[in-house]
Length: 185
Image 1 (cartoon, helix red, strand yellow):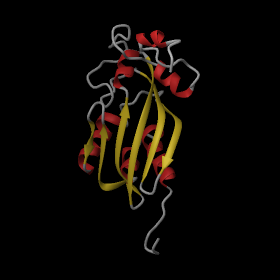
Image 2: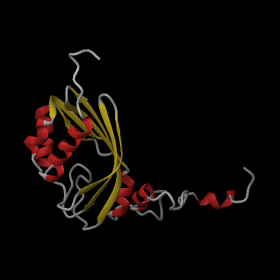
Image 3: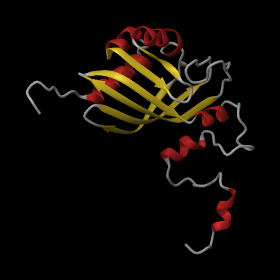
Image 4: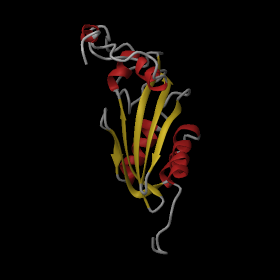
């Protein structure tokens, strides 16, 4: 490493960014953790923004102040590289208001949701450059009553429970699983 290169605590930078978004609900402070032209992409719903102006608009009107009051992030695992953080967490909330970025156009159902969520966060010079956020939209829709898990190969809150408890059964959506019991392997 040359003397010009700085080492940043990417984990602490990401934690500060999340505190501004979810605890303080402060858009300006959130934006200050980011490069001049950042982007955010919530993959399942294609929400977010590219560039300072569009992302600030998104954060102000459709994200930071749109999350339910009881929203919480439960950390599961974190991997820190030289220029990125990969966070695995549970995203938990009660659907008490329309959540534009996760459930656009879906009126509040009052249902409680826990969904595994992955954030891949890239940094440049000690600031967030981009976020790619992934979650299982089918699990969210099952939990709020918009998809019927009995008629589709999807699961609801069980996905979150299985994430934190490996002893819960696997293969519950596979009807053929029972057929393989006792067959030679």
